[in-house]
Length: 305
Image (cartoon, rainbow, N blue to C red; front, side, top):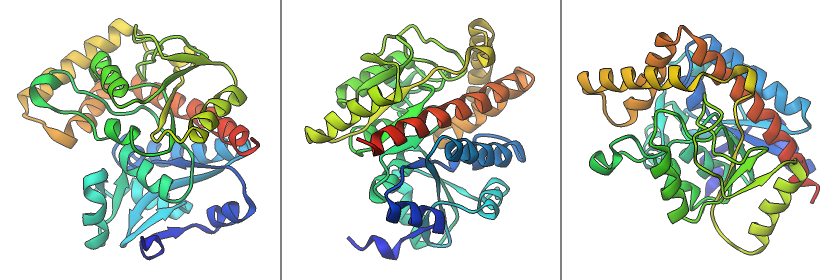
């Protein structure tokens, strides 16, 4: 496997690897497709700062000019965040985008693949993908889920996006043997909402306890990731009834406009933001910052074990 041909590290990440410092992976789809400009770039910069402030090194991942970039400069982040043509890259797209030297923003699935290849064990995102509503008919299931069963990367997130079928998402993760761990919660969060009504497999309350679980799974040789589900801070959480109403309206519009495949999630998130008057974007920003702090602390604890 000639990864060196396709992977380029930033100086900061390369130095962290050399010095044995904890590194936290970050996706770039949240920058290119998850938030409007310039809030996306500002949030990405703030998230990187939060990770550094909590003792770890951030490694935002993207594909640029035929290379998987592990760690981006501020100019790179601004470029991806303001580049409308940056392709949304999942597992199936990585080789194509590299071969054609396109710009690509990595999803959860693609970021996990790249992070594992770089030896990064902890990855922070907003929320994982999942089984879409009516997924039993459309078979619209995020590539994030099977990747969680393959890649040895722990994903710190605010659960699955509330636009999804949470119950079926949890069943899929169970089938693929992915532990769903509640960080200071007994219920799986639903992105903007603190609780989905579905219990997690177990609960942890400290970075050290979380790191111990990860290390035991690795020492047992059990392949696959682990979901560390962290609720959005209570002060920033959305009202469940209001959010469900916004989701339903967005789903109806997506159906009317025949929005399909990888375009569904960005469309829904954008419409929900418009319907809620921007409050969902505020919650989104708050939860990714909270996840970043939690993920960095877990990475530090894991690095010390």
